[in-house]
Image 1 (cartoon, rainbow, N blue to C red):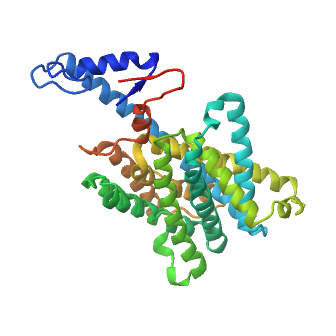
Image 2 (cartoon, rainbow, N blue to C red):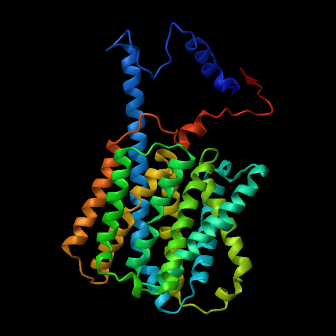
Length: 366
């Protein structure tokens, strides 16, 4: 693989030296020299990988916590008569503007994308972002937050099945058990045993299932882009094209001329930052470290937070089975970290950092 420029000369030299059969590459165990320098290399690499994965899970837990809290805010807006499409338009537009301003003053390199990747971002924004945003909010506008969130979290099942059949990602016993335990935990936390699915609004129920499919597509397709771009770049252009889609479907003038109160606009700003920009950014930063399958299973923490928020803020009941469901989700996330695959696809972050960077002024070395 080529590497570029004077900054990679050391890496090129090291690769040429380490390619010698008499000297194994750093990071791999040496069968003839145990408890020596090669063992230390391996232990160091494993420690770095463990820390990277733990950071990924932490990003996901923080992001899904914000999602869980914000669902109550969104439901209150819908109860006041706000159409779901308008909320999606506002949250995507505001979050795109805020992120653009932040990157413009902090790191302009993340604003740059290749023209050949424009079709990718169009699909991500028009289908992934626009689809998952609208169907989720439409679902909770038709049925209660609990069943709506519960149905959407069929997504980890779709993601795991796709990764197993099409990406050749191993479905280990630990991962399958964690998935089933997390889904069961969601079912208990959201009181699924008290919900008669046949009495729910059928349109809302179907919308929830479609939302889970959009969420699965968004996660998997986003993971593909993370192999080339930083999470904040993916979020910026995904949200930007998603907002453009809603500008076409629902004119922004409908929001500007609606004479919403200051409290509603503050709720819009809260949702744009703390329900959209930060949690989606953190979710993608988690995916780039642990891959979409594990990230989607860990994201089942959101229903736990939503249940606790409803209990603390709205005075809803919290029953022993719901507490048991929350514990099940926590255990599932822990098991994800314990159960390692022996041969698994590399994380997007690892793939992106391996790619050579060439410039016009610096020829690649081989």
